[in-house]
Length: 286
Image (cartoon, rainbow, N blue to C red; front, side):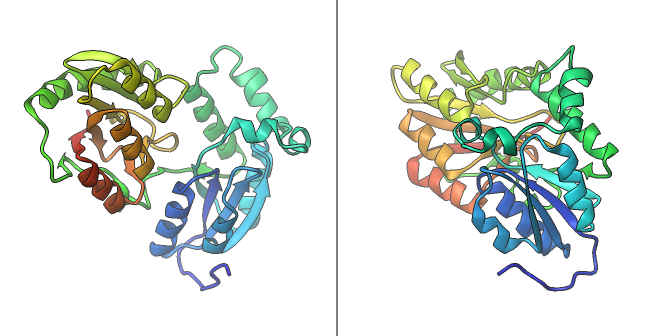
């Protein structure tokens, strides 16, 4: 059953796609004393998310106006937008064409405001501006989950080897520059050579590709964002599955930006890394 306790702090909005992150956000908001009003995206959110929210509504992925109306109706003026949106679920939903038809706000954003530049970061910034005009301010994704953020230093029992430390020094400036160019959030390094760069396929697919390109185990994955990256959306995330995929592909090191990477269920992520012999290093974002 949803929570019904009376809170003294303002209601916070949650715009939720799939995965664990919406659950962690809702729990963090409640721990901070807020009621949680959630808009779950049709075909994306986990049905159990309803149980950890005080109020809940559904909406299509491209119904930005409905997001605003449903959140304002439930008393929220600020919101966090998190969770995966899988395009395959949109394509194979028999009613997808009806549920996910863009409303006028989304259509105006795509066809007019972004007609000259539709890179992902520009689109997300455009979504934030559109929501603000509709009375909903998007806020820092990490605000309510500080305990799940990577911290500086070596986070695991295993320390980086000399070879991994050299790869870290090569990976770091590349990672920071990649984010500035809106290329991706991760890069794979082995023996100071770049073996893979994340693009539209996502981190898990890039990890698999890096493993195929690396003939022997022992390479470093660097993932994160610089201090200049907008923390309202698309904050890099690492989960237990990422660690397991990294180990399977022969990766032995993980470099992340401290305070700018979310470790989903942080103790479990670190425990998985220790079990699989992977070192995790946090480095302060520049």
